Image (cartoon, rainbow, N blue to C red):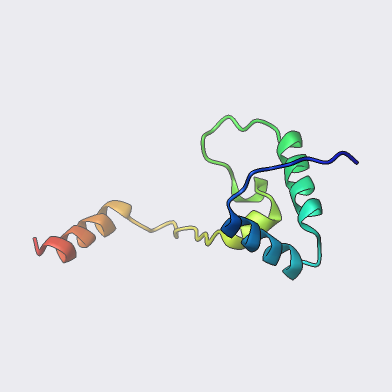
Length: 87
């Protein structure tokens, strides 16, 4: 295997090391897997990626909820404005 030197902020390195440790892998394997996934990923035509298209490690850290079919975003935003500005 070839070696690669990267410049990464120390806080990010520590968080990544902890993540790798928690998932019983090495930081090198974690980065290799990520780069492999990125290189193999098909281009997505829409700007939004589907949750199932994301790597598992990324799904674990993204809190995602899907609104119910009867959810009215305009009404909710209107309620938010009323609460915020007392309109």
